[in-house]
Image 1 (tube, rainbow, N blue to C red):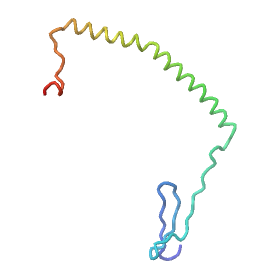
Image 2: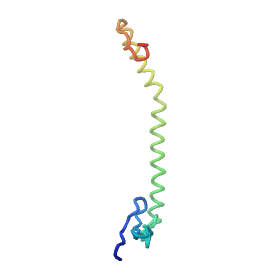
Image 3: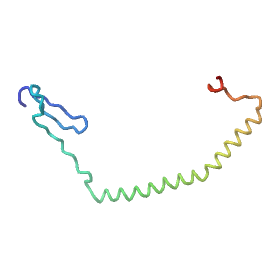
Image 4: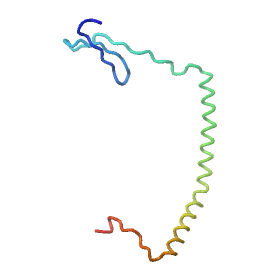
Length: 100
């Protein structure tokens, strides 16, 4: 390394810049090698096929949950209504907006 030059590493791309402090100019830069995005094409295709099955499973579970959602909400409402009828003297808590 030449005298007076210092290295600065870019935080987003990890490129190393050699900067001259006197001229405030970038003298050289070195970009790190990036690995190829897909190393094994067959493995990537197998992974994509597996993801389709996982997506279908998640969709099926959510669909079943949505079908029973109305029943769950009705059950919760009935339970809260029953509790309200059993204790009619219990008033709801005051909200901040009610105090004005």
